[in-house]
Length: 344
Image (cartoon, rainbow, N blue to C red):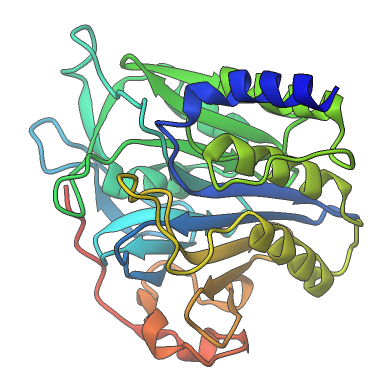
């Protein structure tokens, strides 16, 4: 029986072994409307990431390309900004969270839609968070696909290929993927985890197969994308539920630790399946954004509800390497700052 399970498992996950990429996202469902999104970022080389708080009324430009458009934010947000140049993920004051995760198969345009209005990956998350307060609103904004995504390469020429997880304060979820240039929107209401490749329909089949096996009997243990998704899905669905914000954060953090990649571990030829550099938690009910750096002693959060998000308020920045020993609420470490300059 075990041999049959192992053989079928290899067949199921084999499609994503060569194309595995690290990053994991989960949604913890607690009691009393407590939803916490956990996320990890893994890569071989350092991706320095700082936290920015933008007030309502902030202005963004979609791209540096011809045909770009601008918008003024309706909602205040906290963003995780990599290289001080591009938004990896964020949460707004309405409890909407959006995160971009690596997806090697992503292709943003084709010959039919390549000339639509441009949106840079550096600000795509902001475009969604600044203008919407629910998953349904995000879907309504993007479903016509009247835009074309593009982004700069990073880390010596790696193409930025992403798919996106979206969750609101009511626990609704969506996954946005770009397949052969076409936007595909999935509603994974019964699966509360996502990772990277393969694309969602195949990943959903893998997770459902392992549900049939039963996580208390066997779980895949590698750092490959599908294995992490299976483990994350099982544990986030089977840990205790709580209404307490602190306990919920500890529970979600422990699940994220289970699917993180050990520090200084690498896979030859696959820089993406490497050390977890940081983890984040987004408490969508209480508007706390936690940040957990792998090389830090501290574990802290920004309380977005206590930030001045009125139009005209300054942009605030928390420089993460200066807060390695900070614990608990970290609003006191936010400093007035200039808006980051997107790499279009």
